[in-house]
Image 1 (cartoon, rainbow, N blue to C red):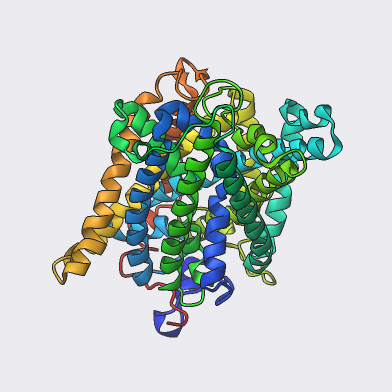
Image 2: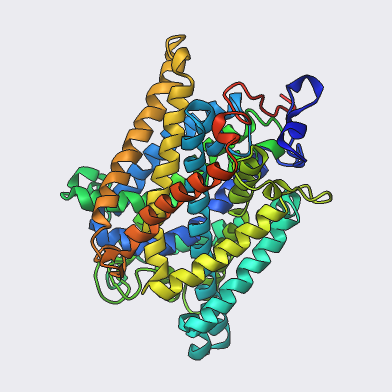
Length: 509
């Protein structure tokens, strides 16, 4: 079906891409947002690297990282109210600026999700074998995740399974996530409580100090931005609430509310968890210390036994597997819907706009996202000494890029409304702009710092840091692909398929 056929019809005021409407309520939207963020997975992957960058100020950095996320989320909410489209950042940046900015914004969002999907799969594989090893008492099985061939094959199998569930539509995704999210949050709560109780008797334990919450105690701006980039990573994913807006009850309002609720729940969870773990383990570079380079990419693997005890340690392994696996599946929602929207408006091949007639979800786009994730993970495993650490740092660049562009788009889109009221000025202007400026500063500083091969895992490609090559290199590749697509299909770039006055989908309000 052509773009014109998709946009024609009843008064031209309703648009449908074929997705199932009214399938997601407020609670389900929040659950999907939390699942995408994957708090247990995010913490085990970033606690160590963050301590390496900022030391005792880890809780402060987590708290500061919440601020731009909250400010940007208000921009998302306002844009979603007037244009509830599953293309989110791509659609809004196109409407606010032009097709070129919109295309690159969509590319950045796609890159972020592919990068994190590969990272999620990697963590799921590591903890999957650790879990089996813990249950069977076999160190050999527990170490299989470090075998490159076994790791890659298992990762591809996990991605294939997540792709299959996503292919079956948002209803299948929603039902699975209630159980997985509830389980991981319950285990994390148990872990935090026991860490606090045992902190006084732990070998590396240190008492809590309010100075941990002071970001000004970080003397190096580079260290601050590196820590902030990591903290942005652990909040990333709340925009999943927005990408299912066309499938949500109250598509113009519910997704924005769900995003704000999700961020509030997550910041409270992270702050308490960071303080508890730091009190229990300390920041030493040996043993269970959070600064130990041997455990920095998998902190919970080192702390599960000491905190929970040998009888319950497997619960934390299982929680990380559940967290990363559930997020692996949920995080397929944003790229598939972005691909669907970009194809619908002619910014990508029309085949990607296919919607399954039974499951009413993106079909071809889901398969493409699955293949891209598997290929990216295999490639990264071959070129990087530490795929998990490097992809996390690179993801910070992607987050800053497309979240920041979306926030700027909010300010520009509503620029004529900012004088109508104090609320409009702050919610549509000042708050998104501050969030965008913060993300821009982190992006620029991180891009400069990642030129050094010592940044991240220490890997390099042609003398450049692998994190820089992954992050900036893929953005440049996007610009090349965009120009190539424009040469063959210029309609989108001429504004023929998507403009500011293009009607948005509206269901029940």
